[in-house]
Image (tube, one colour):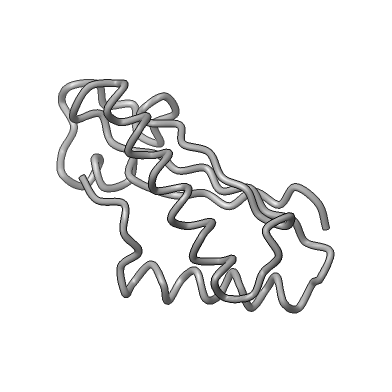
Length: 104
């Protein structure tokens, strides 16, 4: 239910910022995902908030806004397709952000 950047997430995002600083041509797209708890619309909204928070964090670290974009996918692309029988571990795997290199 949260879209804020945690300390652990910031640590990982700082690695992305470093990679983008080392390759000034790199353009990234963030794909944010949720588990399947809650309605599909709720999860889509939540994942969009998470994608936006991620993009804003990276921009706040000095990366030009033209070099990073983000979109939420809600529960539409599960990493583990466990339907309504997911374990906590499977839910955790489905709650994720992926970073796609659009241009290098």
